[in-house]
Length: 309
Image (cartoon, rainbow, N blue to C red; front, side):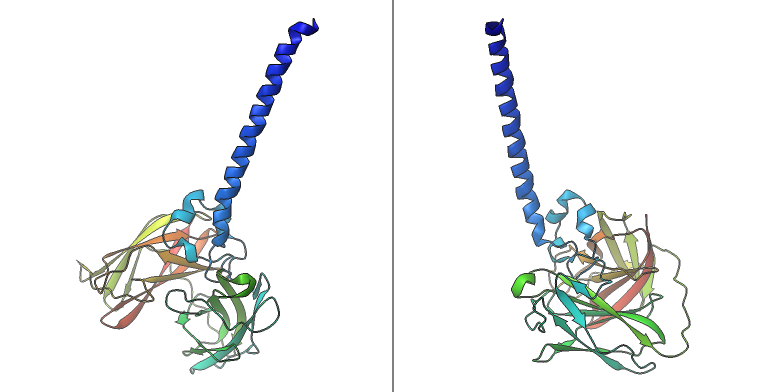
């Protein structure tokens, strides 16, 4: 009886060993593929969503052009991975240009002075009012002590959020993009502007922009913007920040930040009429999109509301 069972037991042992080996190889492969995604902290332009949006995106997202500079997080915190956005400015004057001064400190508590270049700049700074009006995209200047100054245009009374988007060029955060933010108050009587209804087109300075694509929350989706003027395709877009268009978005209600990165390659002063983007918006609802592009040396900023399911 024992002699008849031994071959069967031996076969079962061999099968179990084979299964364990296959499982080990599978886990090793998974580990190496996931390791590549660690260099793409979610949605890098700062601490964009403090909840990494890449975690819920398609596994192939890392292969999509333009995704390598995206930052993790929703941008609503002033702290991420030991880096902190600090400022003594809690109020800013209304009705006139003003300056917002801030510093980024590292895990050691000292001001960071080394930043990597991202889209031709070491720091991208955004200001948006709580009702998603008054959008400003600025490239501040840094003093030798690490203090940045963002020269803002006129601000309307109300609550504002100031976003700093950057990538440290040293220490533990080297190569990791962050988006951090703080709020400020602009004194005066604030009048809330209702968010315009969702639409697929926007007009600015005689240009018409048409959006194609149906982004879904937490997933990477392709999106195309077509630029026309007087009904004719526009093909003279000039490079702006090393691309033909810069697209920033904010979520209604909480001003969550998202930077939609372009995939269209730059080739001289003849971009357009179609511009491609990787759209990854972390939550559903209405998003206010601000698309910036340049023609004839002039920067244009178009805005539209996009509903994300």
